Length: 625
Image 1 (tube, one colour):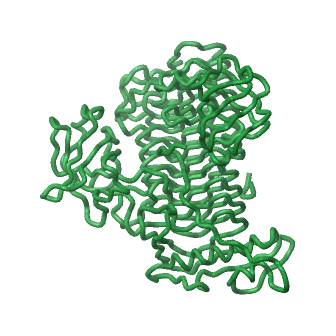
Image 2 (cartoon, one colour):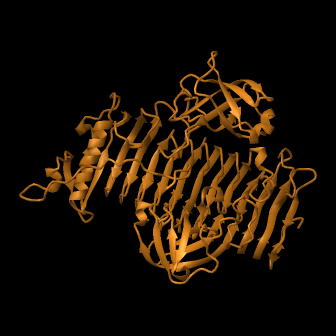
Image 3 (cartoon, helix red, strand yellow):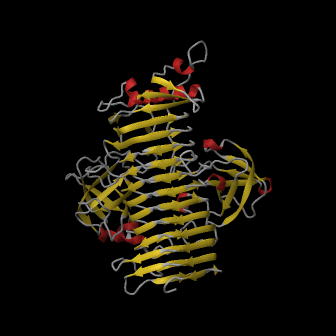
């Protein structure tokens, strides 16, 4: 593949009020529609077989590096470019930025984003050592909505005021379940109730290096008051569910907490063929990049990390790359994600709830939701309580507008036996199929490396290290309504996964505490009964200091793990049982072949743990098996 290729929750993107480019003038006389609309691009129009390209320097509208607020001029330049490309399908445009830092303030509208491209096509935002500095931490950076063929290249995105805060713990009261935090200079106050709602989660850090604190529970659910004490310190109350780990919190530790919502550094909504490349993202209220119900998104050679010398411990408050929906999966190649406050990547689709059935079960009355549905799609109906797949059905008719995320009535060719109101419905045809995740680095972050629910894709040659959670998770995620249930036709090869599951409280999870995990979960994250995965090839991966399992294979048919290199150092603090280099459970036609194992612990870990429901599953050339 190449570059040509509603309910608000913490994993749902809802783009705010869109600001369009304005209407076009009527075509007529000698003036072109673009000219009539007041387009002020400079330089000649380049023509050729690819069409007519026009450049739009933001300087022509008065934007300048170092100016107090270049936002209005940049927005007008984008509107000029949109008018030009709307005038003819042969037209394309480049919005050009000079070297330097452009300050971008609030535009005074209800929009959730500082810059927007809405219902546009064939526009490139092109920077040259250019930084966009967002002045309002409450807004996302760039939103691309219902657009086609947009490219963003060569830009750095940062926030003057970071959309999170951090400080040093000055007192701990284990009995009361509280600690006192002194905020560091230059970080926002918790009085900002847009960024800090009074409850959420935060993470423990080494206050000197800013790295996640090792050997403890990394993440704590907390609440805090609307005002600091008379000494300027903030009293945090640890959630009762986490108060059993109060001993992990010490005076002198760092603690960071931030906004978790649906404003992101870059957001795509119902857009196709968007390319983001050669970017640097130092901060974002939510994810670095989120691609919602969008097709064939490309993210290349982009760095997400804190700015050197900034003293910040967190880059973005959520994932590095977050993708749900779409008929053509994303291409995510050659990027680096670090200091994230959640996962490296997540690719999935969202469910719609089945409200009722009629016409003998052939008409499905679906609640509103992000998943789009079209004639010919394959819907998967799942029992909500335990994640059991009842069956699939082909769509023959759709009543309602699926792009509006409103309720739908969907007719299927045949009724699915056992389907009842309350079941979950996933669209397997709208789940990011055909993804490519290759050559990325994910390090020093809270969360997983890759969460994957999509099919027909590859996860190859990535490097993951020092993550508080696990490495590669191929499974449904029921707490957030993420599916579908079961991935098919995946290649997971050539990945290096080192020192994951730094959060010690996550090691006891029996099957997901693995560097690479294939599993099926119920709504309570217990092991599901179904074999939902099919045709999974895992090979040539290197794993060092995994938690309970190096590779865990469950809930699948035709699954292979070959030529795995596993190393365990003497100091790797993993002691929960069962524990093994390979865990096997609920497999049909499984094969583990040719492993190289180096285990310095005493006693060494078991080579293979065999759970129930193994059918025609073989282990060959695995030392100690």
